[in-house]
Picture 1 (spheres, one colour):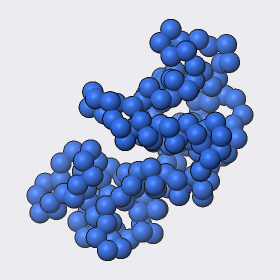
Picture 2 (spheres, helix red, strand yellow):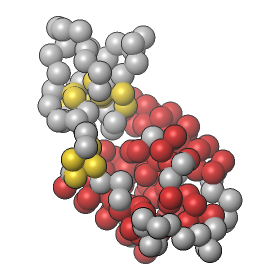
Picture 3 (cartoon, helix red, strand yellow):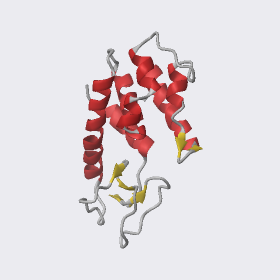
Picture 4 (cartoon, one colour):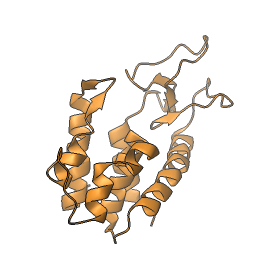
Length: 167
């Protein structure tokens, strides 16, 4: 399975981007604010749709929409494998897409060890903290130790996609 085109379009909306005209520019992943490209890029420097810039990448001149989409597809390919390697039950396309979105946002290690994966793989699983899959999913709503309205909204949209197929 691969993330659907509908999934790619939804993930673009969930991730957001920062542009000047039609050019994607470098921004801070936490704040969404543009970064001064004349200084050393800080940790969390991002471009396109959530692509964390690596030390050997130079995007100071910005990138096109085509390049931003290409980077997104490259980045999610890793998470598609993580979902495939950790989910042992058949999934519908919308469920796969939603799980890729969650993994993309919380990271491969967090996803792999999550209660979400345990609930999906084992219908008899019970968590003492999260009584069901929905609450386990929506618990990933914190950034830098604080509950985030943006993450609450994102988890609700992902859950709606997973449960109801609403892109």
